[in-house]
Amino acid sequence: MENKRLGAVPPMGWNSWNTFTWDINERLIRDVADKFFTEGYKEAGYEYIVIDDCWSLKDRDEEGNLVADSTKFPSGMKALADYIHLKGLKFGMYSCNGTHTCAGYPGSFEHEFQDAKLFAEYGIDLLKYDNCYKPKQMSGELLYKRMSLALKNSGRDILFSACNWGEDGVYQWIRESGAHMFRSTEDIHDNWDSIKNIATSQLDKECYTGSYCHNDMDMLVVGMYGGSNDSNIGSKIGGCTDNEYKTHFSLWSIMGSPLMIGCDIRNANQVTKDILMNPDIIAINQDIECRGAYRIEPSWWNTEGIFILVKALADGNLAIGFFNLTDGDRELAIKFWDTGLSYASGMSLSLYDCWEHKELGVFKERYAPVVKAHDCVLVRAKLVR
Image (tube, rainbow, N blue to C red; front, side):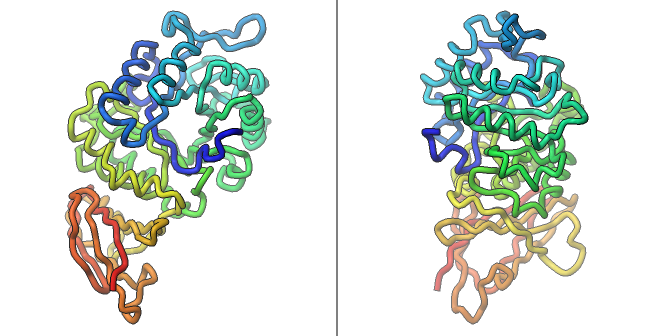
């Protein structure tokens, strides 16, 4: 590998599945690449444009190679990769460790080295590797190690995005497999319950994320507003509120998940763009040390649905997120003692609000914001005397 920094921080990009599912084509992907450049997503840190399932024909060719669907992608995958690279972006594709992909297209089982070579020839920079139609007697751990080995010997630097949904005891072996990120959860849906359930399922998994192997809580649904070709992903009641999307983005950022956009960025409104390109929140996610966020209970009573997450940053600051997943406004109080900062130290915390983009002042011993229902407050805390 030439790029020794590949996967050092959580990858950022866009994936076609949440909004477009099977309805993908060359024009769409080129348009997204153009928007990355003109709308500021690239400048904000997003770099991967990933085609998910349904890009190939239903059968391999006579040599056993995957074949891109020429109706959807008439110029071919190499030309599409070249177009994306000319924009200064990176190109990602999809396969599966089973005999077939989740949508019934050819998977990479027993074709791992052949497919890795083909992907390298296309010029891809990321492979999302799903977990459907895996033979039941086969070890998922072995299959992910097999594709990791194939990619690392393909002749090209390819970020490996393992997607096994938290199955097979993945936390115990995924870092050793060579994967740069790993899906640890069920598929996300564009509704509040899905966001809430996924986030809370990972609150005790902070030790399983870090540089070069990031806990992937699935793609972002920010800005979808219920818009998806698949009714199981979208929501019949219009997706989430803007505050819920803000909380979603805050949770994924402070918890160190890769930030893979799932909405149609060609039609994103200003609120969506402000959430997805908030530099203060992205900086927390992209902190070079990639520490997991630890949880602090905000009080000693009635804590269900409310919690505080603290992430140690490389410059000595702390990112502190106050999350209220309940249906009513709540005061969430953090005692600085619980972060390791004692009153006897003579130190206080100077707080900066990462959503309001303003200084809040210097606080001793505790800070207790009132957080609206389904909302959050995310601050950057600097130690001062």
